[in-house]
Amino acid sequence: MQIMKTSHGLLPRARCSSKKRAQVHTHSFLTDALRLFPSPKPKQPAEVKLILDKIEGSRGGILTTPAEKAEITSLIESVAEANRDVITTTKKLSATWRLLWGTEKETQFICKNAGIFGTQAGEIYQVIDLDEELLQNVITFPPTGSFVVNSSISVESGQRTSFKFTGATLNQDGRKTKIPPFGKGWFETVYVDDSIRMARDIRGDYLVVARDGPPIMF
Image (cartoon, rainbow, N blue to C red; front, side, top):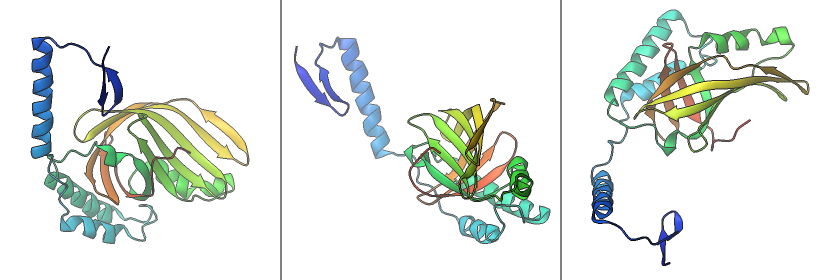
């Protein structure tokens, strides 16, 4: 048996029927076409810079007024419209993302009331690993505490990723409290570049996050 080298390693060389050769030819043609005509690169409208300016100092959205929230979400929708044909569910999506601003009420409630648990909220992260099909949403409680929500994910389209909660853990003072799974949904990455990502989800919430490194699970 002959051996051939491919981009995936060493594979046995097999005989191809005319039908299989046609399939290979078609696949090669499509691959070449995608290289010649790739998905449009994300446009970087002025709204991106404007959004970052408006969310600065908002404590992740906690200090944002209703009027400011309406303005910011409208700007995010403008960015989404400008980039509606851009594929964002690529490897660029895989990263550890740090929350800059968001509208999710549960996250804001925990951050506002962390004192009830004798602590205070620190950084908030979202970790996405497309290869492993994993998602984590993390609220940290310095120096060592955290609330970690785990999910499995699946890419549904050029911008949409579905998720299903698989469990959650509250880590505090060396103790781990497990919380059972509680739902599923989807989010759409409407904009992503080398440093910033913007998304909206099934409940109408929005978030703006900054790339903080590779996808490292907590």
